[in-house]
Image (cartoon, rainbow, N blue to C red; front, side, top):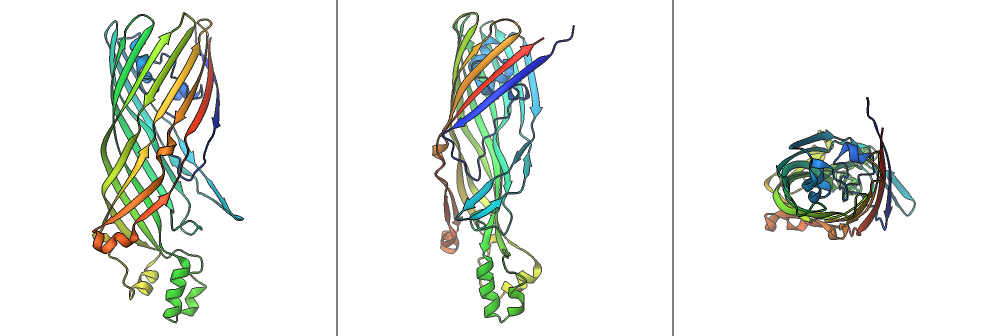
Length: 347
């Protein structure tokens, strides 16, 4: 007999502040993606390590392994005082691998590799906000060893240690088109002013590795009765810090390099930068209803601590030569709530 699964999902966001670089990736299970990425109050085997580590305590196999990838395409719109601009579509491929093991009837352990944060977005080199950002690419991975204890037949608790690592690459304009036009005029290169009008001549490229940062993921799950299960989980904020990133100037072409050569631009290849970016906390509460062995209905609220992302600081070193180019781009993200609901039918 063949079995099939039909999943439907609903996902609503309230109090959402839309910003240029939203970078949390809710794509850590292909199966749960079909249910709106719910899972806080569901017994998902090894995949529970991400959604609610307490769910691992209900593991019904000696070994459970799950892996997958998802394609994510990021696009954004900017509008201010009549000016409108759209970013280019950028693809990223978040992935996940889970392996859970039943040690005793009431004790389970596992390890996971997930990609809960990351995005890539390209605004182009010559848009109005190029001095803040032209493109950004962020990749953050989490290795999480997890332990779950099934205290009673109905109650389980779990905890995981999240060891996060990743890298970031950011490009922004260093010299604006208007500033370059002034240089051309000072060199009496008036015939080139029209050629380079509106073109960002020099960009600043920053790239760095954040090393390993540590957070945690804890949860509790309780069977109210045979039909209802409630769960709650909390994943801590982790600050990813780049302590010695590389810096480079990028010229639009060799002609521009030659035209700007007489001017004393900083030798950025002798500099490095520091920056930090918060991976926000997540608090989730969910309820699952299982009326029979065919239907599962689950809903939850996900509260994301985006308020921790107030600004993106970039500090250049050595200070004596490069501190004048420090930047603290304001972000002022706001906390969000995401309401999720999904249903599954097995036949």
